[in-house]
Length: 433
Image (tube, rainbow, N blue to C red; front, side, top):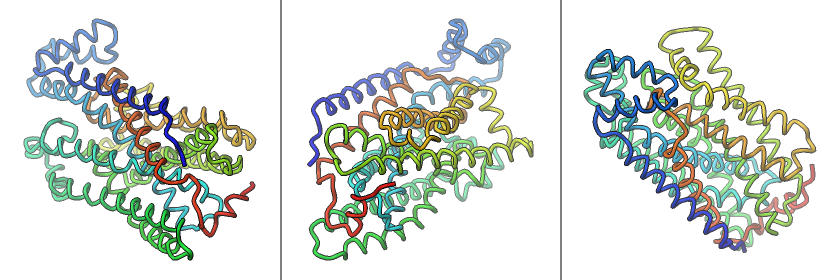
């Protein structure tokens, strides 16, 4: 049985406490009036941290209309909310990506991976707290506690014919019903599959294994539909005037590679502590191959989405990328380097995929890159050019990293890390690439 070390547990609590303090500071420092918002932008520009904010200040000095000032206030008030939402979604999507990978292994009856099932089940345990937090943020958005989703504002919709045309789908009640359906389905599969997995350990036949195979195959159909809809609802609708038919796959690729990366990193950590002794270098090599391959797949989808829109140069489409290139140069282009160039160069060599510290180093790069990917998807639509990596963003990362570590490693103490009586267990134990 795995024992959650006090050192790691205390470390996770420290991360959560620091995260809460930073997030609280971010919320408390947000402006409450238009005048405070204008003063914050002016001070930021004066201190040399404004970037393109100087243009905003100039507009204000020229007496821009009240709606522009109100928009600026909403952007600055959104920043701690956007930081919270970005971090909450990022860590939730890691667990959701692992759930998809786990279901694929079950449905494919893969022979190499059963030794890693308990690691995957531990990581997917985070779906419950992570999903609840994301859902609460969505509910608070519907209750107008923030301005993340502009289509939730009835006044905005009343003056926007395009949003009026989408009101049948983008309406708060249906939005929350869909979110509850998605989360309920994902969590139900995780809990039921985990129950069957543990029951198989004590079973004299393979009935639980076969049930797990069938439910996993069915779940993948449900997952592919709901994951795409979730990406439209929770991310793409932040920019309700823009859409991409490739977006669901794009978000899936990001969560899939992030999830596989965390499986590899947790496995290497457990092995370093003397657990998972029968997990060998070939298992790590295969996980690193997936990290490499899905990074290339993500790049293919990113390029396919970006280049077709950029080349067509249709104003209502290309503005999505123009905003990010003009106001988010560092995170936009830095994300490409971290998500494509570094994994490509580091993991192309087959031998490096077996070196644990290389896998950990690449994993950290990939996770930072995909956090920036989510950052690029959320921030431009919610805070405009009033962005930064500040106390709110750092606080969100610290809190959810601490919660993720605590919940995942606590879940791993609930059952032996090595499954029993899985028909493919011996094949997995003897796996050699």
